[in-house]
Length: 270
Image (cartoon, rainbow, N blue to C red; front, side, top):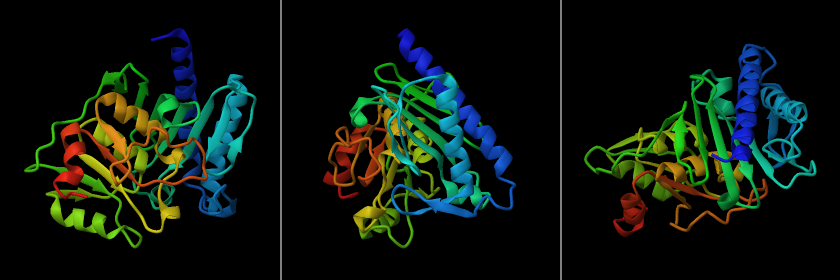
């Protein structure tokens, strides 16, 4: 690993650990769900999200790194850097507020679009497990390499976003596949595909503004790609050109085995 990549990765590790500590301290607060403002997309920001995002900003100053910041709540903050840190301080806020153990801090460092993401770190805020990847150098869980599992229709398990806004074809997919789970945390579900716990992750809502942003998927995109899987939109189109902003949304199909990525549409899964 190049020296610059190693030092940048260590900064991301320290930021994720600091946010984890803030969440652990704040999760018992009676005010953690208080709405304290509106995020960059106009949706409510809870006190817990604000505390986590503030810690990211504090750590960037403490680490003295000149990266720009794109975050779910605050939007785009220009800090004079040639690289951009794409952050979801708490992916799975609703789970955290309801004491469901599925949430992460998601951090990606890169430029311009998903293809430009050089580093990705996803820290599980309940288990303390850290997933990470460097472009071209593989994917890891707590330092050990991870890989997807081969797709077998007889034992397949899919992670699907379900609920009121899920598209009809997602609901039909849930009826077709052998086993389904829905965890409500995009980054965690994508890295679970990367490590072979699931075969695919699908998120497709209607209308389009209810789909995912770069903050949700940038880090897990790099991890899943480096593990040997792939990420497309639900229509099968590549997402490598998807911009690192908060004003664009996309559906997501993340898969472990490229054979399923090729078969998803030709065999009628989607």
